[in-house]
Length: 314
Picture 1 (cartoon, rainbow, N blue to C red):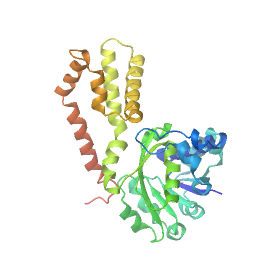
Picture 2: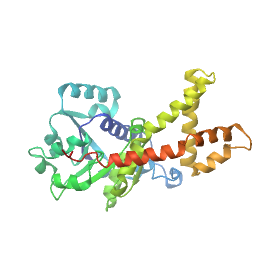
Picture 3: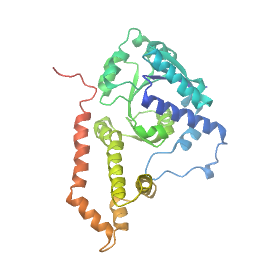
Picture 4: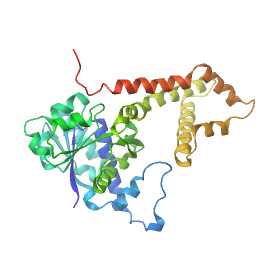
């Protein structure tokens, strides 16, 4: 028997994570368990893949019942339709409106996906302390620290902080999770977050930088992608083809770094021939300080992330 997972404030990221879990569970049940000799090899320099985790995880570490909560009835209707349209396990998701305490009372594991400034009010609702007693609470609220979370729940409640990003929607996300001591909780967390991409355990002191790099990173990468496509259009390529070339080039290069374990400098130098067009373009980018500008963007976003979820000072 698996556990009951409640997703509080099931918006964009909640849907992304829950959809990944549902899809991975359906995939697991549809295929035979591999022999050790047939097991999937480690995926580059990252943590295990979803198939590795789910195939080896005990049934108790996998969710069997799903509850999602929202604040408004209209949002609830849309969410029910979203999961119904998924088919399969999606149809089993129970959507509750303005019923966070009820959802937590019936759950074993709680995933808090609300906006950072709403998390406190949810966890301090009347009756929530008794409902969350002794359970595992996972927060994906940017900027809300473990110290804050612990101050809002009973001492017996275990608290974990996670930071997924938007590519979780297509199961290509990157999630950072605070370390846990026991193997069962680690297996449970990996089963959730490898279902929608890659997962790493890092100390909380790194979370603001992770929020900037992985959380804000898709926006930074999209800006570079758009600029590359614009350059192609300027030189005569049709917009659709220019975007496809740029996106696939970016995706392929990223996969070479992940699966091949190659340093970006190695990838760059392997394309750069003496006196060629690549070095000419690279020097133009260096003239525009693209390298330092991108690095500074991560720095500034990290500093800003530190203020998210904190009470504003007036």
